[in-house]
Length: 105
Image (cartoon, rainbow, N blue to C red; front, side, top):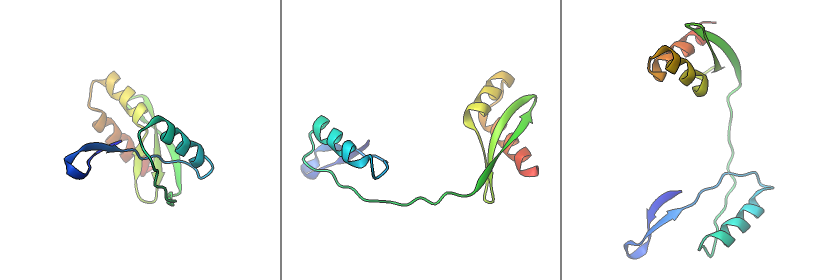
């Protein structure tokens, strides 16, 4: 939901939904029956996903999965958070260390 301002300065919200084309009609029905809307706009979009692999690294004895592509490495947030809490350091530090280790391997 995104807050917006309608004509005459009236507050409102835009409800955005990402769904498969097969799920779209039932979601439109839900939106029409549960909100005050009289219409729903829809459009198809495409998503390009980078090829990636999952590498598991160890940061001070804590195993962290890291998604690695040709463009970047991204630590699994839940794993990094658990390690950060156990180590008493910021999650960003643990994630950065994990990502650097994954790119080295």
